[in-house]
Image (cartoon, rainbow, N blue to C red; front, side, top):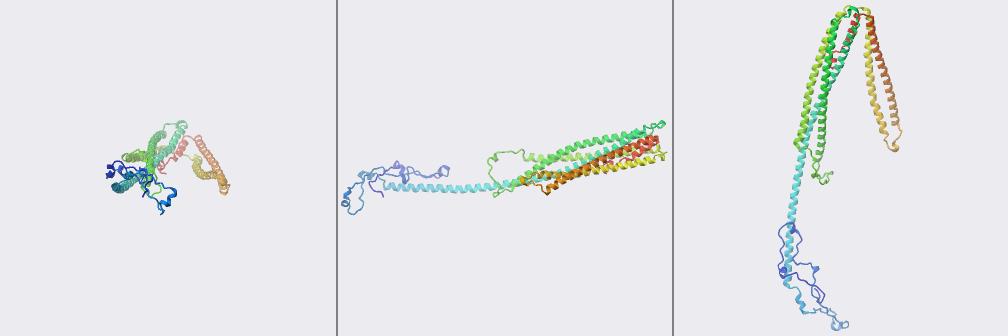
Length: 483
């Protein structure tokens, strides 16, 4: 209770109607109705003060015991009797309590609806999120399967193309080898014609041997031109195959990268450690294709590869046919020319046996020296890789930091190995040069022997020498590149 006569401020809550009939609490669950509810004109208890001033009865200091012998506090009375009518009535008190209860019930109902709607909203959004994540995972799985399919197709087609390209390169090498092999018979035929010009007197005639040699030269040149032209066509096709191979390899590499990324995304879960926020990433669209163009791109690459393989196979068949035709024509003319030579040198004499024996030995030494040169070149080539390894190791060890740059046993061994390999290479190269000089010397000796034969003998001996030169004609398997 409050003592009468204390200083208090009182104010009413407005008109009597607003106090008696406050606005009811809203019943909707919109955003505006979820605010805290207060009655119109309602104030908190801490803000209430009476508006009327009261006066406290003053008692003289010496009259405490006279007027109040019991020691109880004096009864405080308002200064004006009219101030008693300014207080709240009992009816106001009951109405205020009813309004407070109704407002509290409205707030409780609004909060209950908010909680129920919030739980339902969270449940719906959780289900939506779960379904969307499952759909995304399913789509990623299907995408990974599609990438696997095209990657397998590209890999198979790339393997087939590589095999076909390798076979086409082999056919090209066979054509080039055949051209080189035909160069030997052509040179021999031309040399025979040249040597036969050295015949003296009546022997210098346009006989069957000379006619066969001239025809053989024309046939060999035509075969060389045909094979060279076909090798150029194959070389152009090889360029196309390399372009298609590059496109397949690039597409396959992109497929592998995409498969790795999509598989990683497919395996991501809510409990993964590598997930993070990337704000705004959904607004950036860096895609350059759609599923239709994406599949068409790989399909076009495969079709181009199949077309290139078909062309390559046809070119290989044509090359095989041309090689066989060239070999057959060469040997037909070779046999005819040899028969003409044999009929021409029927009266061979034993005077040239020693020179011919020496010429055969020289030719054999030339072949052996060429084999030795090939072996030396292979040996030098084989020593270059160990030298590269040793020098690479030394260069790598120079990057050791600070005190680790130590002249240890491996360092000394590597330095010794480099010097040894350098010396070995120098020795082999010197020996290779000596072998080449020897080969050149042998070739020169062969030419001198042939010159001696042509000088010391007549046209009969010239024809015999030409027949000896024609013994080195390539065989059919060697001409078509099987040996």
